[in-house]
Structure formats: structure tokens, C-alpha cells
Length: 136
Image 1 (cartoon, rainbow, N blue to C red):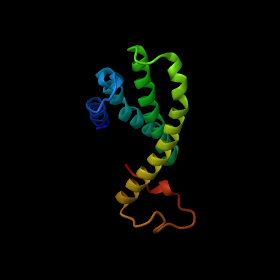
Image 2 (spheres, rainbow, N blue to C red):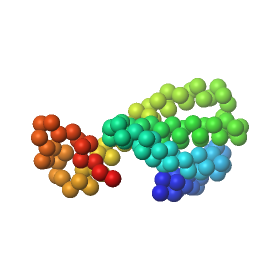
Image 3 (tube, rainbow, N blue to C red):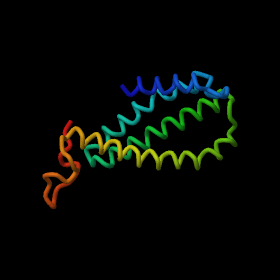
Image 4 (spheres, helix red, strand yellow):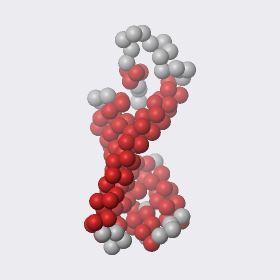
């Protein structure tokens, strides 16, 4: 499913391209195929430790996968220079922070909805841990 979502994301980037960089399917589509896969693998790898850590890892790795692969392909295809990459690094850090916040908010909301509870705290005692109810 993640590869399909990445493909749709990439196709829309290609169709809405306003510059030659994203008009190239090797830049706009191919790297985006790996976002969902990378996020899934990070989630699976970290969920045994902590659900929040797994969500954070998935958000970071998904964002990094997109950024690194798109920029690498753009560099390889000659659309940007190595000097341009240094200007993009601060934006990449901001994207990771935003991804962490959004991933936690969305995943927590989905988890709450799937649990059937009206609140995260419904039916838990003082020692309850939020991810203790997580089931696959």
C-alpha cells in the first residue's frame, strides 16, 4: 500500500511540475516509491520497544527517504549542484520535525479511533501506559 501511495504522490508531482526537476519521472516518481516501505520497516523495527518511538522513527525515515532519494536523483541527473544541497539541509531538518509532530498526531488519532475509546484516558488507571493497548 505504501508503494502505491508513493506512486500516486510521485505522479501528482510529475503532473503538477512547474520546473524540469519534477518533470523528470526519475526524480518525481521513483524516489517516492520507497517512502512508505522505509516508514513501514522503521515502524516494524521499533514498535517492539515503544509505540511512540516507532511512530517517530517512521516519520523521520519516511521524510529522509523522500529527501535523500529525490535530491540524490536530482544531483545525479544534473538538475542541482552539490552547493545547492547545503542550502536545502535546514529545510530537511524542519521537514523531519514537522513529520514527527504530524505522524504522532495522526497515528495517535487512528489508534484511538480503532480502539473504540472516546478518550485516550478512558478506562485506564494511574499506571496505564498508552501503548499497552496496542494490538496488531
